[in-house]
Length: 96
Image 1 (cartoon, rainbow, N blue to C red):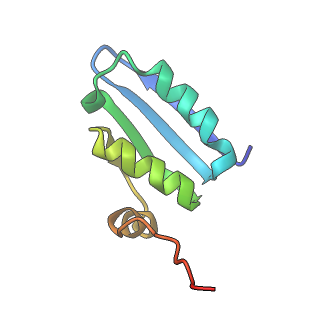
Image 2: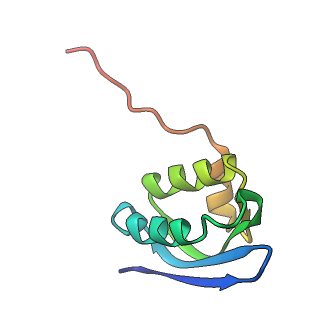
């Protein structure tokens, strides 16, 4: 695994700190932690991304969905903020 998730809970919110390189093969681990936090309202879910060094497209898409669902993404590195703000990439289909 190339990333680490640290969890901090209190009665109002859950903070998941994600460090390292978040890639598609690691997303099930993150999703398990998200499932454990389901008792918290989406507004009470905070993802601290200060230690996130890299994220592939699948990870960026998951982070976009979480933010759209009400999760707060904090301490987002500048490169990742740009990727999250950009429209989701679409694969181009070329005519044969």
